[in-house]
Image 1 (cartoon, rainbow, N blue to C red):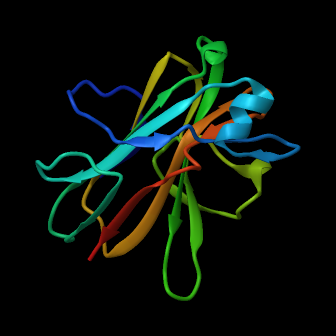
Image 2: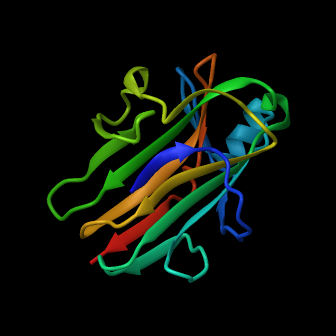
Length: 174
């Protein structure tokens, strides 16, 4: 499997909208409407998962016997294009007793993450020069039975994080 390895995808595809996202700064969590009105930032997220040859969807359910591909794309805020940023990927593992969060590091390894511990949130890819359309290959391979909500985005050098908080990519493998 390939986890969070790259930020460029060369194939043609259509990814569903995941909304305008959310922003986290050291001071506060801002929802999509606040990001634009309070920060003057316009950013949009697209992403999805697919099993086999089907189209990308924001939510999928599938068997363990099929390969899963998960992609994300960010329409980067115009004022951030050309800046250096870290690409972040976080997955929430849902289960009946307790949800756990994992972040992908730059080796594609999943590391448990304590929610709200933004000082220790590691990057899947560091020091990326942001393009107006930033593409992220999140995962490609087989999955064990699980239920995930996947979040991705970018962290600027000043610590501001923009991510798909309005709508995650949801993957359920049975």
